[in-house]
Image (tube, rainbow, N blue to C red):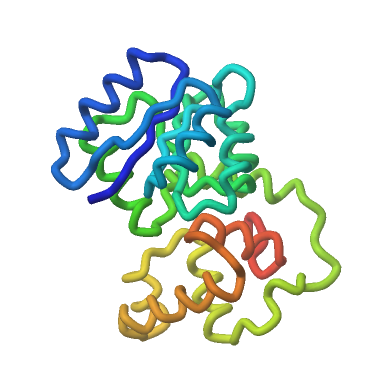
Length: 215
């Protein structure tokens, strides 16, 4: 059973999300929050697997709340709207595992929660484009950061493909590996780079200079 916390300053939306989430037999809502600060408190108390986090909340916003939960094992799925996508980069840097539009179809929202709980990064093509644009603005690093020390050549190949949006199946086909071997490489990358999930691996790949925007 996947445990979920819903954080949104609109009580009506929280209630709607709760009803939808609990219609899935594999999901249960273990807490609600109306502010970012309250979200952090509820997460600490209820130990969820996934947090649905609104960006705009009074006081502590969703980005800062996500940052404060960086040491928590839960994964954060940020709820956003088209006019808020400038927060994508900041959200990923803060530790979010993905972004979801508030008008996402119900079935897609439920699927997203399952995917994020399993460790997948939820980055739509539009979000990925925005992320790459942000990386393009960054100065190129003069040397590989220490975080990539110890990463093997094969793991670098896997990391490069992850950063370019490839699925495990696509990586396996490209590198002529079994999917089990790909999963092993990803597990080692997560450990070596101290990354929570694929979204954080994407960040590491770009910030290390291993992958360059628009390349």
